[in-house]
Image 1: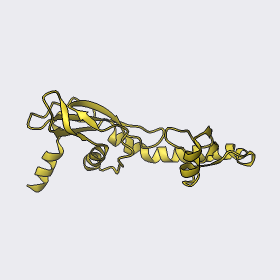
Image 2: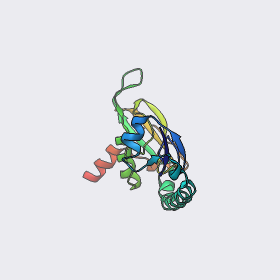
Image 3: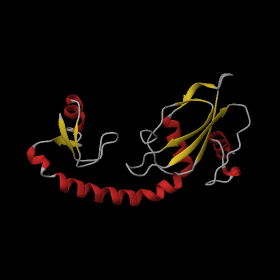
Image 4: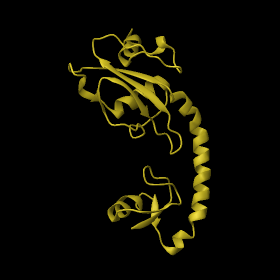
Length: 176
């Protein structure tokens, strides 16, 4: 089925694009959500208007969220976790946990769907993209370390080393 996208759809295309999609995806998701219409001759006449209005909306949204992107970009999040001797976690650091930590640390509302990664299941240092808009994708650094060990030293330009605190340390400070 060919559809004309009315809005930007992540991993599919931008507004004004004509895409061939699976019948069920178009019929059950894109069209009912108002993200696309069937690509008929009449609909194809609106392509230029849709692209122009979508570009204008995208520019306005990018200007609004550029300050948010600057606050998030380069943020360092530290998570303690229980792990085996090989470095595999007993559980995982999920996108929901990362989104909550961003909200606590930077004061920015981010949903778990905007955190563009799989759950982290190993110890180490990871760079995680946060998808604010199609064009604005700041990256944060996530450090997962073994619970009970010393917090690894964080080397970041955006944040001094002594400013990196774990969520546990922040909650302990708030309780005191």
